[in-house]
Length: 420
Image (tube, rainbow, N blue to C red; front, side, top):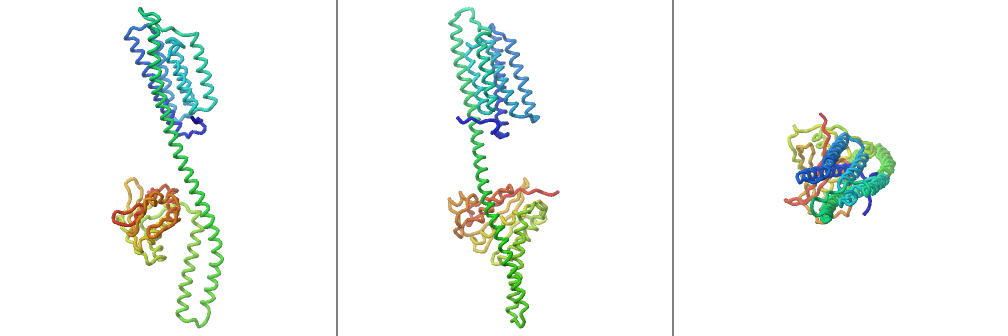
């Protein structure tokens, strides 16, 4: 089994292990206390008061460990102290109930196994040395178990056999619960690592695209400026026909729009969350987008505009949204339905529905996670992948599905930071 060291375990997982350790110690206290009560009722000649004192002492120290955990004390130190308490308490109980001949002595392996799994090598070997020394001392210092009035050695042997069975049952239960819990923690950690690897891969791809976009932006600036100069010279040419003047004016306005887009592209890398009136800004952005795509008809079904809110919204959201809108417009033959509403928890939902096309099962499984070739009218490509990556970085998500009424439905869910 691969051993996990505390230095490599995240704090959240260490907290789970510590909680399990505290619960297991309460189980030990309950078993020891109830056994002491049974011994008293059966009038067995055992040191009941020392056994009760051990149970009370473990309970008090466990309460102290639990309090320190709630107060935010170092989890690794609390884990080591708790495992040391387990070893010492077990040694005391064994010393009071037969010493090394008590079959419960194998329970020394449980805290040592826990230490090997979650503690540093120094702590694990230190506890192993302490447990080994205590076990050796139990051969020479212990109180013998009472043989009873009848039976003598036979009664002790039967008691030993019963103790071996109880030890096996207890060890099997604790080992199963402990290992199962640690395996679940390890599985959760593996899942998070896989998510981190996927996000790192996505970030690297985004970084490559961002660098390429920055390079292309710089390269486009020079020819764009040259086109401005040529346009100005042509407009100053005398005796131009009216139609040519109008075309040159239109070309000038288009060049200005291109320059504005490049300027916004350059400044977006330093963009921060800015306060905006959400629905009003969305309406303005949609109007700008429709100026570029006048053939697209957008039907926006939203809640009452009086419920518009001022929120902090990253400017990175808008390119992600328009990637989805462009994809829907291409697939939906120029018609898009837009649905917006606020959730009770403050999240904002925006749905984009085009009535044409359908996603295959493979596309539904991969939608938003991988870049793959577009296949209109239901194609998904680089734009959707970039939108998914951007929304993920904004703590939102993008879901694609086939709509019951036909077409493809893109659901964007985005947590917003309100401004009071």
